[in-house]
Image (cartoon, rainbow, N blue to C red):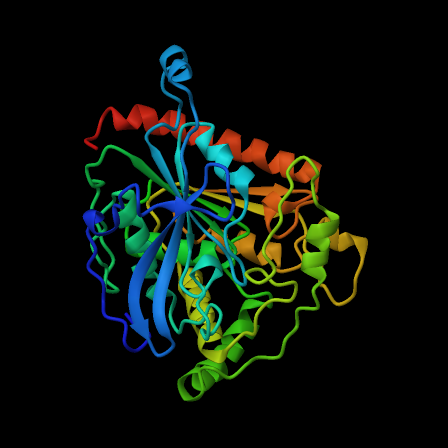
Length: 375
């Protein structure tokens, strides 16, 4: 596994970051949200940390007594954001906690709450670097994961534990979690992917053509910047599509109007991930992929950008998603943006209905199967 210089491999156990009441601090989102800083050592740019945000079900004693357990009471959800992004979607967390799940969101190193002064935004040279961030987050949740060191874990039996794990990823986070789940088979019980960046926005042959040149540049000068092609239209589309019944106020320092610079080393990591997906993964958990019905090329502003994915080519993603594993559901949502859960009201409600239907079906089958296997 490639790592930034100066960062030692982590071998984490749950008690390392299980956290006391004093460790969890109030989060910037307020309300029921708390955060925990996960130290990850040092690299050439200084201190490296990830940040885990959590929201737990809010039920009174009497509700618990009278209504009994909620359907997802034994579920932990771990969310990972996309590029030039961080976690701020309260309603998405509450979708899960209202059904009994414990919700956790991970701001990866050099993103959002984890960004430190002088660091290169979001820069890594391999997506496997995030194995350390994810291991630290799962340790804090109470799940110990054997390090893969690039070797896939195999076996039919899932580790015995009392709770199930759902991985939830958006865009680049969806790519990262898909690759992680493939390397750590038997750990996740389900994946939910919100517009995962599984393929480049160009035809496959174009990716294969440019990949060697990007790889050469990444080896020689990994911090060289690619031309900026984001004109800020996606941020504008989100603002115009805002749902007054589900307001969000992202911090523009952590989620800028125009995305961060793309560096050669980081782009090489992404293209390597795309090639790995294209070769075929074998994720052993069911996967739900949520996508917009259409894409629009953001070369000039138009109202179409408020009803389509202007970041990815969704048809490419739909084809690539079929290579994730043997159980993949693809939901195409008319009128949705790249971040499905930031779309206009009707598309947003449609997305939550579809997610609810998939989760309910998955949970019903899982509940029956759990009775026949140790956990």
